[in-house]
Amino acid sequence: MKNDAWVLVAGTGLRSGVPHDVCLAAEAVGAALARFGCGLVTGGWPGVDYIVSEAFASVERQKGIRLEHRLVQVVRSDRTIEFPGGRVVNASPGPLEWLEPQSYCDAIVLIGGIGGTYGTFLSALHKGLPRFPLGGTGGDAATAFRNMCELWDVIPNPGIPKWRFEALGRTVATRKEAADLADDLLPLVIESIDNRKGRTPQSVFISYSRRDASWLGRIRAILQPVEQTGQAHIWTDLDIEAGSQWDAELRRKLSVCDIAILLVSPNFLQSDYVKNVELPVLLERARTERTRLLWILLARSPLDQTELSGTQAVCDPRVPLEDMKESDVQIALVAIRQAVERHLAEGFETIEVKHIG
Image (cartoon, rainbow, N blue to C red; front, side, top):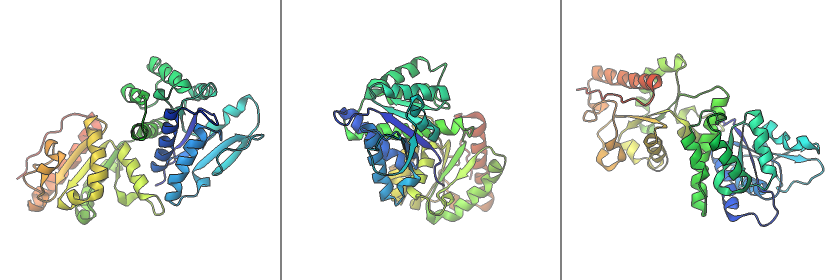
């Protein structure tokens, strides 16, 4: 499923002399937007607009996606665009030209800025759009960031706790720091957009090995009542639509899931994608209480070599599902559903381990 989030990026619009940290942040945000499957909107200016578009286009081309489907440049009709690509929309000169790009976006990100960028912030505030100024990049973004922190109780970003927003105020001096900042930013942007659109997602992500597909089918079947009542959306990689970008869509779902169910087996632990992508993201989200991590042992596995050994299993990990009698398997499957239902109802409460055997 393609991400329908469109993000306007605005910032320092100089042809030369753009601060190094602003360049790093713009480059990282452009690449992250493409990786997360978002669309990009800019005003077609030099500086931040050009840098973010170039980084965004580089990733989109690697994915084989046509830029006119994912990049919109809203440019005053008497001005030439700086970055050649995407869909160009002409805006009439005048005081409303600054507002036109916001007609195409769901949220805004501000990087640096020397006057005009703060106007973009104010108009987004009036429209009620989620606003994400990267305070550590200075200029207008720093001013907007300070104002948002001071007035958070009155005008917060929808669906975002203040402490997570405040983490976006850090400075960047290296490409890695900029990439880390962008990776923290994008999930917040998507969550805030979803919340504003009234979706307040309760997303259940199932992580598994394709070799254990038969167990996945049984898990999904037992969770079907939860989905039918509208409490949650159960998601696996099998739900990615044909023609979608598999990696980008999976990473997006990882970044916003409320509950993750891990079907642990030797196949699961040997999967490079699980080890290098899914588990690191899910464990970090669990540590910061953004995702409730539930796991169940399908087959005997070397758990002492993983971080899972220090987390809670839904069922007794001494007895994997494949070693149980069928009647006990049914009890274990029901325990998973009950754990999910309890979390949906109560939030991050302790879920008692069920001992079966």
